[in-house]
Length: 464
Image 1 (tube, rainbow, N blue to C red):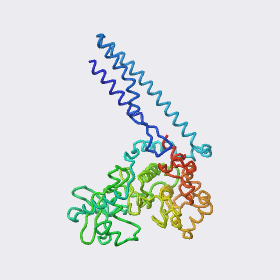
Image 2: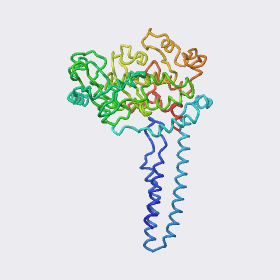
Image 3: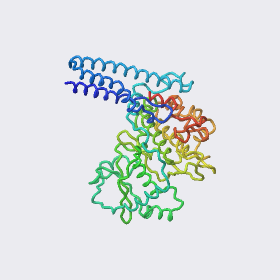
Image 4: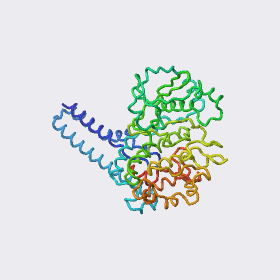
C-alpha cells in the first residue's frame, strides 16, 4: 500500500508541474521565453522530496500506513497551496511588465479601441501557447551547405511516372491558390500539391541554371535547397519538399497540399474590417512575424514575403517560394518581391538591409489581411498615388480620408482599425528603413533606437 501512495503523490504533482508554463518573455518573439518545464519540475521536486524522506524514516520506525497516508495528504495540500500562490505571483508580475512596457498614449485609449474583445483574444492566446518555441538549432545557414544540398537534390531527381499521380478533380474546380501547385492523389503520400515548371528552365542543377540564366531574379534550386535545409533544422513554418520528378518537357515538384489554401484567398473572405476581423488575423500575424524573425536569425532573408507565398494548413502558416532569398543581409541594386510588397529602399541605388525589407513586406501582408485590400499597388516612386500620399503625409494621416470598399458605408480605415494595429502597421511600414521596427532578431538586440514589434500593444494583448 505504501508504494502506491507514494506513486500517487509523485505522479499527481508531476502532472500539475506540466501546466506551469504559460508566461511569456515580452522582450522577444512570442514563442521564446516560455517558462521552462524543468524549472517547474525542479521546484516541485524540492517539495515532494521531503515527503519521500519522511516516508523512509517512518518505514524504519514501522509507523502505521494510515498515519503515513494522512501525512502525505497534508503535505500534498501544502504543495498545492504553494503552487497556486506562485502562479498568482507570476501572473501579477507579467501583467505589471506589460503595463510598464506599453506606450503611454495607448494606455490612455479606451479598451474597446485598443484591442479586440477579450473572448476573441483569449482564443488567440490559447493558439499562441500551443505554438512552437524557438528553433532548437541556432546555427546560421551557409552558402557552402546550400551548395551541397543543391548537389544532393540534383542527384535525387526521379523520372515522372504519371500513373502514380492522379489529378484531384474535386479540388481543381475550386479557386486556385498561387502559392501551391495542382492538387493530385499520390499512391505514396496521398493528397499532395505538384508544381509544374519547364525542364529547359529548371535545367539539371544549380550550376547549369546559373550558366544559362545568370541574371534571373528567381533561382529554383535555391528554393529547393532552402526548403530541405529548413526541414533539417526543424523549422516549423516550411512546407516540406516531398520529391522532384522530371520528364522531357516538365519538372514536377511535390509538396504536402495545404487544405486551407493560401492567405491570398483567405484575405478576400471572412468578416469586414474591424475588431472581430482583427481577432481572426492575430493568430496568423503572430506566426508570420515569428516565422520571418526565425529565418533572419538563421541568416536567411526571404525577399518575397506576400499573401501568395504564405499557405495555411491545420491553422498553421507555411512560407513557400524561397527562390528570391539571400544569405546576405546587406544588398545593392536587387529589387525583389511583388510590387505592392517591395520595400521602397530596394528601388534606390544604395545598399539596403534585407531583414528590414522583409519587415516592410510583413507589414503589407498584415494590412491586407486586416482590411481585405492592399495599402498600395507599388512602392516605386511615381507609380502609385496611394504610396505617394503615404510618403508625404505619413501612414496614419494617409488613412484619414481613405475609405475601405469592403465595409458597410465605405467607412474610413482610420475609424475601422484599432489603435494598437495602427501602431504596429505604422512601425513596419516606415518609408525610411532607419525608423522601421525590427522583428526582434538577435542582430538588432542592443540597438535602443530600433523599436521591436513585440513590445507593441496589439501583440502584447494577445500574450497575457
